[in-house]
Amino acid sequence: MTTYSYEEVYEILKNGCDKPADLNFDEMIMLDHPEEPHIYKKLTESEEIAYKDKKYGISSFIPKKAPNYKRRQDNAAFNDESVWNVDLTSETSGSFDAKGMFIASKAVEDISFENLDCCWLLKDSNKKILGPFVSNEMEEKMKNNLLDNFYLKRECDKIFLPFVTLKEKFSNPFTVEKNIVDNFFTESELQQNLKTLKISDKNEQTPKKKPAKNIVKKEKNIEDELSESEIKKILENCKKSQNFLIKRNVKIGLDEIRSNLIKMKKEMGLSWLARTTSMNNIECNDFLELLIEESKIRICLDIDKDGFLIINETDFKSKKTPKGRV
Image 1: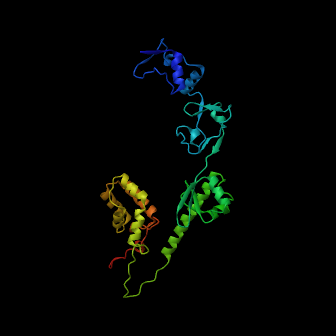
Image 2: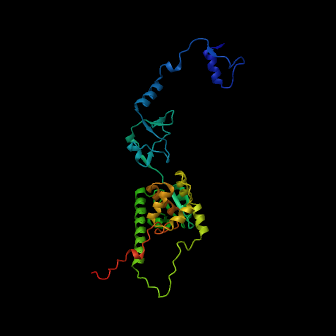
Image 3: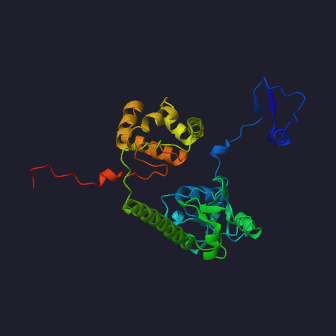
C-alpha cells in the first residue's frame, strides 16, 4: 500500500497529468492520516446562501436574453412575448449561478420588458418560400430594394401580402408595433375572402346560354391543364402528406389515394379513407386538407384546388311538381 500526505495528493490532482514515478494505479491510494469527507463538512457562507436560494426560491431567476427562449407557462410574467431587459454586465443587476440561471438583485416588478423580434417569410413569383428572416435582415433587404417583387408575411399570419402594399401602409413595416401589423393582416385576410365570395356569387347569378339541340356537351376533364405525369410528380413532392401517413403506418401511396378520391365527393372520400387507412374521421379530414393545401391540385370531385366547395347548378333547382298535383 502506498501512502501520501494530503498536500501530496492535492499537488497530484492540481498538476493534472503529472504523477510521481512510484504511483501504481493497481494499488489503493490512502492518506497517511484520516480526513473528514467533504460531504460532512459545514457549508461555507456562499454555499449556505446558494442552498437557501435553491430550497426556498428567495431570489428572482431570470433567463439569459435570447429570442428563442421557451417561456414557462405557469408564470404569468413569462407568458408575454418578451424577455427580461437586464444589463448582465452590471454588477448591481445580479449574477449567474452554477446552472447558468441569472439571479436578480432586485424584484421582478422593477425589471422592464423588451419585445421579441418576429420572423418573416418571403414568397417570390415562382411561389418559392424563402426565410425565415428577422427584422434587421428585412430592413437591410428593404434598403437595397430587394423586396419590391416579393410577397411576405410573418410566421403567425395566414396570407402573404405584397411588399408594396405594406410599404404604402407603413413606411417601415418591420419597426411598427406588433398589434398594428396584426390588425392590418387580419383586415386584409377578411377583404380577400369577401372578394372571393363576391366573385363566386356573381358567377352563379350569371345566366348561362342553353346549348344548341343535337349537340352533345363534352364533359371537361377534372385536370385538363395537367397531365398524369405532372400530377404524379406534384404528389411525389408532397412530403408533409407522406410523413402524415408514415407516422400512422399507412402504406398506401398518394397517387392511389388521389385516383380514388377524384371520383368521389368529399364526404364519400372521407369514408373511403377511414376504411382503407384505419384512421379516424378527424385524422382523415386533417390529411385531406393538408394534401389539398400542399399539392394545389384538385383531389375530390366537389372540392377545387384551393379547398373551396364546388356547388353545381342542379343543387339550386327546385323539384318540378308532378302532374295532377297542385
